[in-house]
Amino acid sequence: MSISPYQSEIDRRRTFAIISHPDAGKTTITEKLLLFGGAIQLAGAVKAKRAQRSARSDWISVEQERGISVSTSVMSFEYADLSINLLDTPGHNDFSEDTYRTLTAVDAVLMVIDASKGVERQTRKLLEVCRRQRTPVITFMNKLDLDAMEPLALLENLEQELGIATTPFSWPIGSGPHFKGVYDLRDKNLVFYQSAKRGRANERVLVGDLATPILDELLGSDAARLREEVALVEMAADPFDRVKFERGQQTPVFFGSALNNFGVKELLDCFCELTPKPQPRITLDRLVEPEEPEFSGFVFKIQANMDPRHRDRVAFLRVVSGRYHKGMKMLHVRTGKTSVVRNAMTFLGRDREITDEAYPGDIIGLPNHGTIRIADTFTEGEPLQFTALPKFAPELFRVARLKDPMRQKALKKGLQQLCEEGAAQLFRPFIGSDWIVGAVGVLQFEVIAARLRDEYRVEVNFEQSRFKVCRWVTLEEGTDRGRFETRLAGDLFHDERDNLCLLTETRFRADYIAENNEGVLLHTTMELA
Image (cartoon, rainbow, N blue to C red; front, side, top):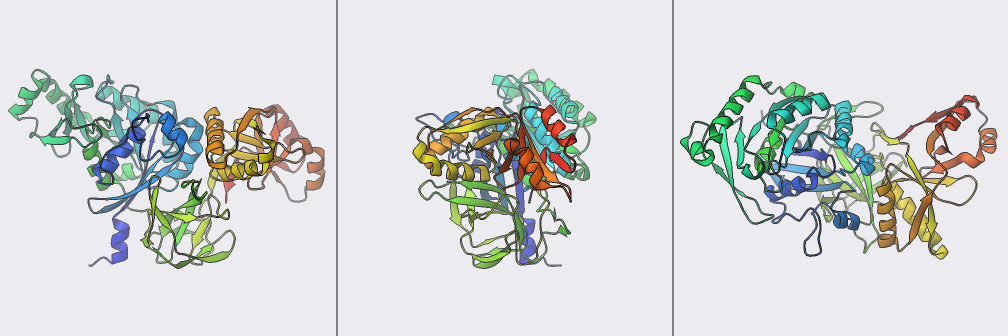
């Protein structure tokens, strides 16, 4: 039975995110996957220096200066007749909300572990999000070229810390300065590497299976140890179970060094083979299948000023069903407005180009003039609303103080646009004129201050606020809203979406207000819709 061209395009899509704890090598492996995929010819340095180019996926100035990712980047490229959509997420805990939202837009996850440290705090949080969504996870044990934990210890650490079964697909040949390559446990091949110029793909040398005498020549007495380890792993490891993998209950594990390109091609080849094609998504009314002919998609990210020359804003949309084609009419479900879209974009980090078409699994960018929000749905007419993305109460609060009072209008515009992205949360008081910015970590305030300076020409200091707790407020039917707002006006705010919020100094006061105001409900999370 022949497959339709539309179904064929769906089947060849792969959309995944890369997650890790900070400094595990996530952005490095992102660039090496692009290198092996042919999307770039020379991988950029991870930590930018004056004489080096920054990582391709890091394009905000703060990312380039610090060598960290603080914003999700989208890279689309072709590999092995597949259309790959790769999302490089922030590793730093201060920007975890961007990662949480991104994970709703992918069908699989590549988890990068620092082999010298094992599972770390941020990795636990991110995997829990994957587990709730039943997202398939493939693991890459990185930095085997440095002093690393024993491979068996790494597998045990992964299972104990994350509660996920492991099945190794490759095995390291040596470690630290003696790391020479990997043994492919599926194809029974020994893969050694020849060094190449920094940033370019190393040559892979296949020298046969474990029985080859070449192994003894290359490893000497270590050859016997490798054979023993592989025999033990093959006997004791759980076999790969595709059902468990697709439910997020088992993870294939690869070993290597992203910096030196060891094990990266094996990872990419297997990742393309194992990860699922675009999956259905749930709406408030029904399940939407990728094969449905009518277009639908949801916005999971807003980014301002990707091109500072044009002060633009772009909404990143995951295509769920149907085909986008240039010039098509789209219904913006929240506003009820229909418009013709002729300039949707695809991405390679900061670089972009107008695309003529897109299929389920693809990530496209829609120009946004302030009317599109995170979690908005676009369709060809059906009023769908995909399951809302969560928004969490911030933990830190600062007052934005202008150095030049004449830049008040620019400050307002900058804060509103940056907070639309989800970089932080913005609160407008019922009484007073101070802008309160809420965030998960201190680094977010530094990034916002830097972007206000670079992108909006606004110099701002963030001063300590008296507030420590945020709760979103909903009122039961029949509750006197006016009376409540009058009594607690000094503690009430509107967030950037005009939701009613309560900011207080302590949890005790928040609990006291809830208990002593009948019909008032306080929430630590808000559903974006």
